[in-house]
Length: 188
Image (cartoon, rainbow, N blue to C red):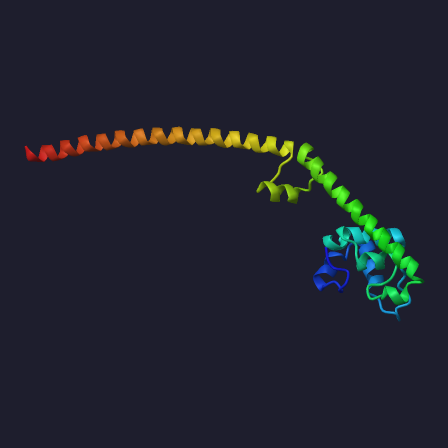
């Protein structure tokens, strides 16, 4: 996500190189007046790019970027001078407020459904809230099976360790007997 008020950096341009809609949009959005060959994307394409790539605060709280994209003006347009009339600008501001209310409503519904039913929350949100990775049921089963295998292997290794310790104790006792025999044999 990035701000549509400033030209994308080289790294951002590289990320969007394979997305034709985004590339067409940014070619138009940041084009100068003398670049006549750049066509304006239609309303649907503009809104899709806005919702997919604009910064979250601009999506949730629609402002100047939303208004310009909604009306089909470029990033540096001054709405008070370039809009056909102030009634259109006022209408877009009303639409922006309606979108704001809809966004808040969707956010509340998403939160409640995630809270009670465990879905509709994105994985990063679950990870942040619950301080760890969130696995699907299949992944959890795989993790459980792997844990059981590791526990079994651990218990086998612990048993082998106990047997080796007993063997070492036996060798040490045999070594002590042999040492006593050899040393005791020298004294006689």
